[in-house]
Length: 341
Ligand code: KG4
Ligand code: ZN
Image (cartoon, rainbow, N blue to C red; front, side):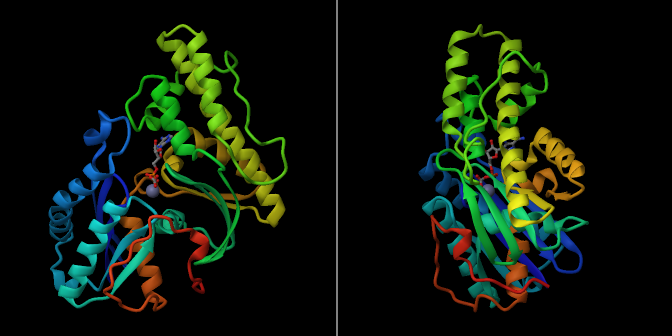
């Protein structure tokens, strides 16, 4: 079975084909980063228009690269939410229209579930149950996963998501949107000890996060410090260290609470090399296991949508329905559950 996945929830057009026997056949990605850079963030109207321009050429490129004809595609999966309304509508409309024309089922996919399941495309996939830490540009969540669709939200950010905190702090340090990866890059040259930032909400019980105060602390330090490269690197180091330590404390607390020792870290921020290294060390010390997707499948992509669509289609859910539905706000916990095989 081959599923064509369409991702258009934000500023990346992603098209992929996933084969249940051969795995990922093609993974096409067009990033709109340059388009939005001058505005310091994603402009929804420009994003939708660019998806319209790029989606068909990318589908053609995906078919060409995998050497497939349209009649060799068995289903189409598209991101139905959460995300920007206009952007979602592009993928949903094109996906539904193609499915209608090709006479195949169409599967609306939850973007956050797709991030969560992305590590399952790797060679050594995680087995349920596990604790999932979802860290993206819009979400920071700790979820107990006992099956596909069996998601219990343990905690989440009450303000900025981790990716958002990275991007806003990077902006304060002078980097273009989305500056998260750049911040992490210069943090590698930073020295420990010169600056220290708080680990928000770790001294309170529970599993929620808050990152907006941390960004304000960084803003205050930047104002009082010299603007040389090394100072910027030292600040970036201290910020990243505080974020990672906070995530580690909450992950350990949640693992103990649910009595598990298996962790899955996913979403765009899980591409962060230092985060992966520190989480792996932590789980090694605990004699537990940790799983990630490869870095290109951590950030937004069509592969995770195709894969999630395939998992849900195999379980015969949902029934083919050509009503185009998108859900700009759509919690993982509202998803119907499937027995995971
Ligand atoms: O999952 P994603 O691609 O899109 C959303 O669903 O939001 O996540 C994008 C977020 C951005 O905030 C980006 O700056 C952040 O992930 N990100 C990183 C890194 N790579 C991506 N943050 C820190 N370090 C990275 N290496
Ligand atoms: Zn995402």
